[in-house]
Image 1 (tube, rainbow, N blue to C red):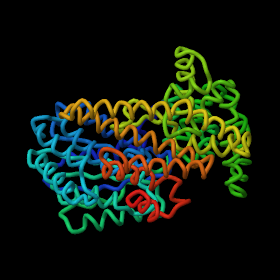
Image 2: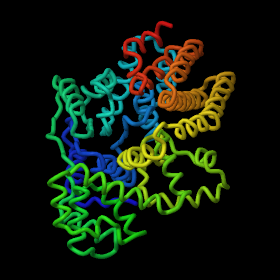
Image 3: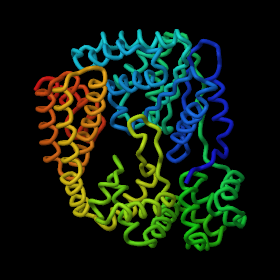
Image 4: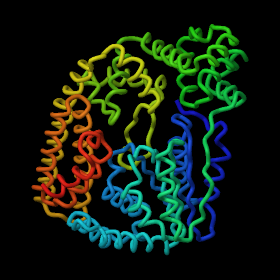
Amino acid sequence: MKIQTIGRENIFSDIKDIILLEDGASHFIPVTGKGGSGKTMLFNQLQEYFHDNADEYPNVIVINYDFRDLRSQSFASTLYLNIRKMLQHNKKLFPSNAVKLFYRMLLTAPESWDGLIKFSRRQVKHLINKGVRLVLLEDTVETIGAPSDYINNIFTIGAYLPNCVAIVAGRPEDNTLSHLEVINATLGNNDWVLHPPFELLPFTLTETNQFFQVHLNGLLPENQVAKIHLLTGGSPIHLAIVTEVLKHNPNLEILNEDIDQLKHQYEIDKTTLLSRFEFNLMAEISNLGNTIDWTVLYLAYLNRRYDRKIIKLLLGGSDQEIEALENKYRSLLYLRKTSLPSRENREMLHDEIQRMINTLIWERIDYLKDHRKSITNKVIEGYYMPEIQKYQQRLTVISNNGMNLEGMTRYMEDTFSLAELQNECLDYLLRIDVSHGLAYFYQLVDEVNQSQYPNFNRLLLHDGVKNLGLSRIIPPEEIRARIYNP
């Protein structure tokens, strides 16, 4: 289900107006909001708006990153996706010989990235001089463990440029504020306009009522809306879940309780009441049928990637049967559509739904994680290993056939896809078996050091693993030392 921009219209309009300013200045715009408040939706809307109106705004290039995405965490991939996006936008602005030179530098770059950064600056500046308005959307910045080289590198390239708009979104948490301070410091020496944060607040009671008017095709009783607003705190994603559940069961148990009694419980023990409410929602989802139940459980636990092959591997059935399941749970659980370049055709469960399913269902039915270990091993052996082998074979064929611009582009695409698959596989292994996960990490270190482009592949491995659970087992400096000094 798509949440309408109730209460967000002014923020969208204000940011759009800043992007369209013809002042030649660069603008830094922070956006904060709790999980489920609509930050990703806002970014998707901005990207879709300028994509749909490209004829009217031909010089606006919007590039969307999300730090939950392993590919977005790679500095090399970020540079590559920038260049590819610009090339696709207008090939006349970015000549093919410059693209080929950039790809060659990326593949053969030394450990020092100074030359590559300078080259990227020069090419991006070339676009800016042609009148392009570069818009960088950087989502979920709070998922990065600490203010990092990654942020510094990104803004090293963009910070000094005129006519650039950087919009960075994160939850209102301490490390989000730390990242914003790092970025502010990076931008402080340049001619940037620094805007106060746009805060995505929860829906008010009036906005909650508007939401149900739109999404339930009619009015809920006033006391029902008041109960839902109390229990959800006006969180858009929780309101979306409630809406879908009410379509299946309009007599949700907790909503039959007296409003004054709920308010009293809220004042005495807010945490217990809200946990009971979330469990009530998850119980309703579980009652819709075992097949849907297990499908969403798998999705919640394996939330790095959705692929129909994975669901088919775990549940069996034909493609038609899997498609029918997708149609059933698509609206119920609000799959988060992403506009990321590397995930254009993927959908994922929203983080808040994933959290509720993992804490309220998985922890109760699989306390020792035996079943989760079993399905993870099955997905690794039946999906990840064959996919990884497929990409390794494709890369060998491409490199043997010569590396013209088309071949280099295919090689880069497949290399990033391979690195992403390997990092996801490592992430799952670390969840269920630390020793097995460490062994796989050491295997990856050996593979990148024996590869055709070792420095490039070391960078992909390092950027991919530094924000995974591996950093809780091995200190970050040791991770880097093992990769770069095997």
